[in-house]
Length: 188
Image 1 (cartoon, rainbow, N blue to C red):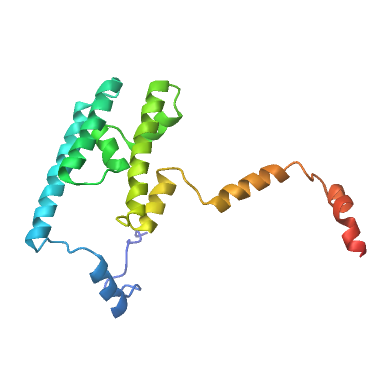
Image 2 (image 1 turned 135 degrees about the vertical axis):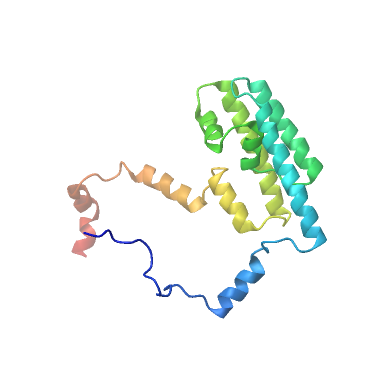
């Protein structure tokens, strides 16, 4: 018995097609793969240099020594200001030599000093992001995504719904109670 080959049969065309309108829109919104202008080349070089320095900061940090982690975070903030880059959760964690999951674990952990520090890092990143949104320097859609995924914010409707469900949870427990409460409505 021959093994079935993976992928599309030879000579067949992909079922996925793109309209001219889609292609034109993507060309407008996607950055070019190669930097062509001197400004783009300079920005790219600065970004690479910054990213390497952020990554190097992470190597100066020792997770078992919170003082080194705090120092790496402060150096990251200075580096971001120096290079003119906005702060973010991922790069802050990289500068501290930890993952975003480690930061999240610290916020829920039992070691108070780590928990307080993690909350401080999250708050600084959140405050910066919120200000960028208000100043029109960050697309609100992206800002909302970050606030929901990194800052723990949710839509008020979701919060109100949960509160309402909790308040109503003990009201009616059985069909007999429903009949007793709403039975008169059926008689009318």
